[in-house]
Length: 442
Image 1 (cartoon, rainbow, N blue to C red):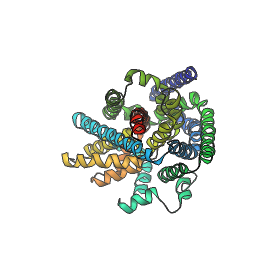
Image 2: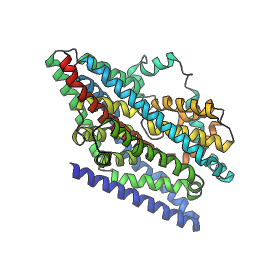
Image 3: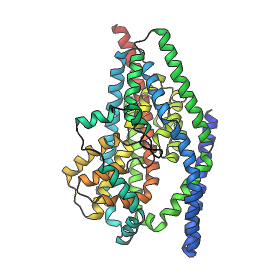
Image 4: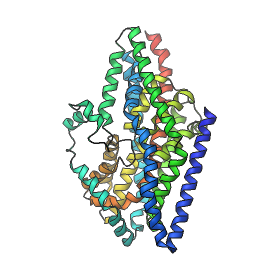
């Protein structure tokens, strides 16, 4: 299985290279023959994008049942409710610690590089004109959200209509996963109170659902070596080299700090709180990181994360089943980092000064808003629009980064997923160490 996963990762990487090279070649030819580029963009929109959507939507099919079955079974496998508290406490502490550090690194990078000062006025105008429709949609979505309060928090996790919440408002949207997470935890918690025979039957049923959903994902992954280059090619021919050059400082700085956080900060975490070698750890999760990078979706990568954690990393199934589904929705360090960087970048472009106090507030708001981001491509755009408004920055400025959002979405998803797996192994080792003490105390 490990060799098969490695071959799949290599094929996906080769596909990425082919798609990127073909996109660059098309841009070069299109510079001399504009009709060629226009035709390529039409092909990308009407042929390649649907192919990519087939791949992504096969993955989205399994999100709801997989999150529910994995999380409920993870709580059920704890066996006793008194074990849930320590596990949850360690998990949430690591989630928020790594998100705060991630945003802090991102804001530091933005203040050092000042990428907003490198964007030409002509490029900004072109971007706003190109992506204005997406901007308005993001602003409209954010405008429908009520102001944050305790009542809003209750509504986020406990809507009156649970089924309606996670089903979604239309065929084109993925439902809200937060209420489903709470419901799954409650099901698993009540399941621990059942008799031994009923617990086993419930566990087998939840495990069967997980296996079925993982099988569907396996079918989808067979399309990845073909769908991934199609999606990459589409992004490149639509964005254009002028825009990429204009945004180069921001993209490289933001992407670089995400990579630094994933491989630097998380290596420190592993050294401090686990017995694992960071080098071997990241080699072991290579396939998962490639999957996260290519799909731009924490939820879509969840089956691969669960499989890798249990089989390759040796994480206890109960810990993996609790930490990873929760992390796919809540542990968004790459997303929080990105949100802070975008707000500061757009503020720099429009000349809106954000001092130390405002940036500290931005740090906190980026972390908490990232928790509510759906683990799907582009899920952070409405929340970023809201953050821009909160700091007096024109929300339309989000159009400046829309063109390169997909590339950075891939990087921040890889960061999110990698941090989830680091959290899972640290929490698992912590729980294992505490178990003999707890047993002895009883």
